Image (cartoon, rainbow, N blue to C red; front, side, top):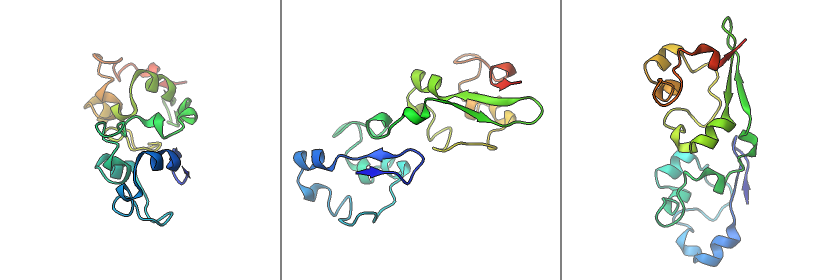
Length: 151
């Protein structure tokens, strides 16, 4: 089963789950028996609802292991944010996901969607968004403008 109504489609192997568990373990307590009856979000899952009822890192792999359900290939790219005056920001999602797990940034620092127009340099200087790592200790400081802003 593929859930493709989101930016990051996910796959669910019903057959594999049915071999491991009795239907009543999930239906109707965790999931209703009607396709499309619930709009499952990562916030729901992270709070222990739906898939998160088992995928907590104890009973089953943690929901933070994004590539187990989501095809990440589409996110191995650079994101470009248009900025007037100083040059567009080029963010290498591929570089960051090689160095860090998805839950290092999502959703605590960034929503699970492109954040165009929502990041402000003043916030970064205060250690928010990119500034939480780009502080000169963990990564280059946000004052190194040419690192992100490209002519």
